[in-house]
Length: 194
Image (cartoon, rainbow, N blue to C red; front, side, top):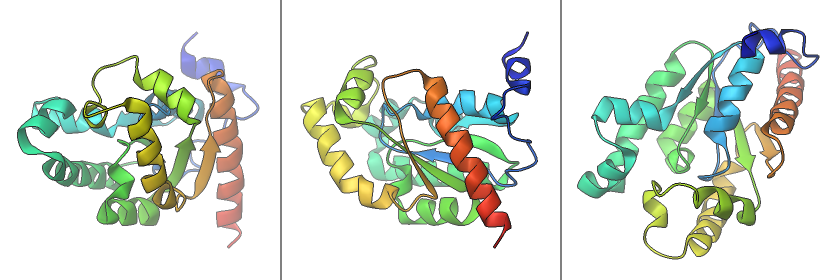
């Protein structure tokens, strides 16, 4: 039985035709956008794409290498172009990098042309998750906890503009997917009644 078949009878399985726009996951690094995004896509019967992986494929370099060679501004410019291309494509689940939504032009595109979901988590959860991989360029310049606290304070007012806000925990990812599907169903119903 495939993962998709496993979800077919799930009570929270949405008709793939319901989301007529891409679903874009935003939030700080370590919140689980890619992991949860893959599971959400399976549940909804949609494709999944990780924007950072698309950027790396387009550039032929890792995110860390792009940051080191060209700086954050060049990375954000490439990120904006890749996300714009992904949003113009079919309805799918898109996981973005933590800083993508902070760029005003990228944020406008996401808000206008997709359903945006802010995945949020407690700082302790983020510190624990980001410590598992040494591939986060923004965490290499000091104490990861202090950097994550600062980023959360700076970015949360922008993240709060997303269509939906879902709190992730250190529990099973399926619980977060359930929350997202329920919130999405309500959002799609509400949008169709406007």
